[in-house]
Length: 456
Image (cartoon, rainbow, N blue to C red; front, side):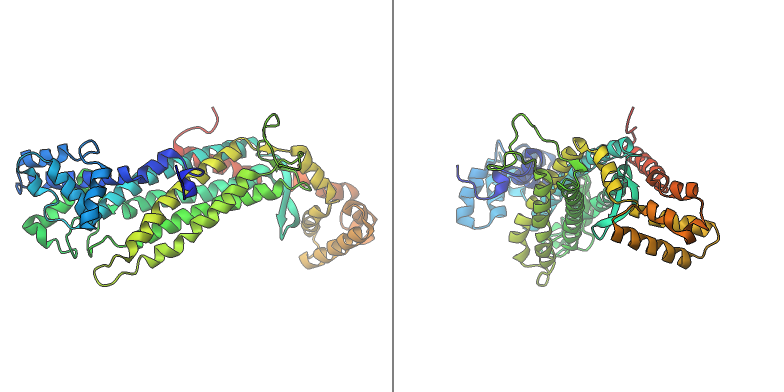
């Protein structure tokens, strides 16, 4: 077998990819045709017997991809090929009523809405699983002391659980966005050639609503020949934003796994896994790197999504080919990324001893702000306190000594705070602010969103 796209052989999970296979696309389209026939029957446009016959043959056992492709070679129109294949399978007169009053994109866009609905269901399930993993990790590492970094430099103490709590807050926002976008992204139409529903006659509005109610979709209230592509643009932007969040988390894992930091590490099978073909000692953050690379691909689909929103008049066909790439790839890749990052965090090795060692390597400089704030509590102006601590910090750095030693030697400092007060202010465990409580609140937010306890 010859495979061109890496989705065929390397990336993506079968559960998600199956939604976008040719067979699945054909089945979704036939589901729409069956719903249309039943809507007609419910209003007396066609007989119930004819509608049930159309529904009976609307499956891959009766209408195959191969037969549709065979007909398409003649029609050069994929949807019409499906209609012909369905018609030839119908017994009696039922074939006359296949696709009655519809245009191609009534079927195509509504089937796409069904695919999006199924795919978003998987993304939401992935997101919930990832949130649960993050919440368990945050709770476990609630009080694990570490260093916060800004500009790539040591800043002030945090806890590792607090870092994860920030990821939870972001993913909870994404979860909310998914729920909000479902009715907008999962919208079909049954409104004919330019959206007026003229071919459906006086029953137009009732047929459209009946079809969408049957399929569990919303519908475009003022369509052209297609559903408004702003819906797809919003969807792809959301999925790309989620991919970018995963990119951010994966980048942090890669940074913290650097040899000189070694604060966390991806799981590594020391019995069999190989890190390098030549450097036998290597343990690389390959999954996180993979996620960062895939995020670039997902973001690359944002531009064609925007471009496909611009169509001539009531529509042209310039969006169709682009969307055949955009939707399956973005969904398959994001699903893959969510599952991979869930695995990374579920099996993450947290090196607490190295975190403490890195704190100690700062030689007290990360506590400069705490000392300054302690001075203000003694009545010293904030700017004056800042200057005293700044000079002491610069002196400590130049002399390669601990800030505590520099402060204890500073006469102006000792006139403000006692030696015990200075030592207490230099303890990193005393300066994590509300980090533990923020972890608690984010874990509770996950429990509320998922309606379950994070840990028994």
